[in-house]
Image 1 (cartoon, helix red, strand yellow):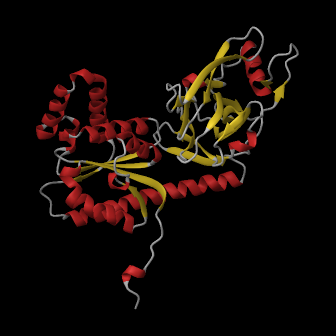
Image 2: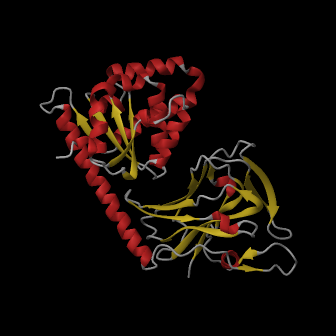
Image 3: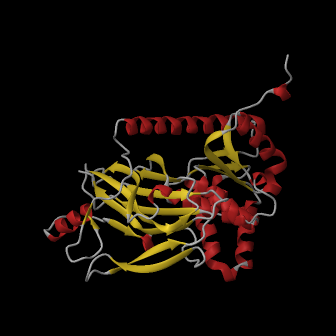
Length: 393
């Protein structure tokens, strides 16, 4: 019989599960059992031990952004840790954007103690507040996260309970696996819809009309939208401009250069962003469907171009489109695109996805993301105009 050490287990894949916890409270017992139990179930888990020694907190915050599920282990001394509270604030931010499912675990503290900052849990937080009066914006984010996250459906681990930690962890793993199975089933449905041409169509260069006055070309779909608005049609948010996108490190001149262009004579100037040297690309655009036509199919595309000297784009970017429904449910489609194919061309559309607008009584939020985390490549020469939303018919 082969020894157990000779068995090679598959590398966990699928959505990353990030665990936020106070190490001094739970690392040596609860986390030391939970982490291997999740890995044994082939769940793609991430804890701070997986990060390289000497890395900054910002790296852990990036791991949260890369994850799709976050487990927050609330324990009595959770609020005595700056790092835990910063992680919690980032988790709330991603949750509010519809990019993260959060499962609070109340480890020997009651949910009401967390939400209403009672007992030692609250005292620890108030002490940090007093010590950081010069950083009120930061402490306000902490407080809002402490109020918000406990409202998600979680799992309490009462201090006086007949269940052992092992029993509780077993039930946790089962519930997390059920959630992952549900997510996988949803994703399979999206893939099948994609095969049938429902959700995704190939990215392509935009159809354009030459400006008779010699100006730059303008996508025909945008001209049709403008014409419709002049004739009394509904106003369509055809473009979320670059300044209104969430672009990582947008305010650092060594990463992004901002400039203005005119699309046509006498038109208003718009700002564009050009990447200089990036290791980590992330661009997020968000709209609501309130002003779109119900029942109509729209496409969401990032309008970009790659300068002739662009480089570092050997690894494809990933595009995500998430539709967060009125009831909090969501659908998502993912695809990849090789930007090397567009170097030296004019403005092109990089498709994030296609969606159908729900009724006005149940509006949805559309979240589109373009990212690439290949840290070994210095990326430059990407010019971002914005995120365009256009009817496809």
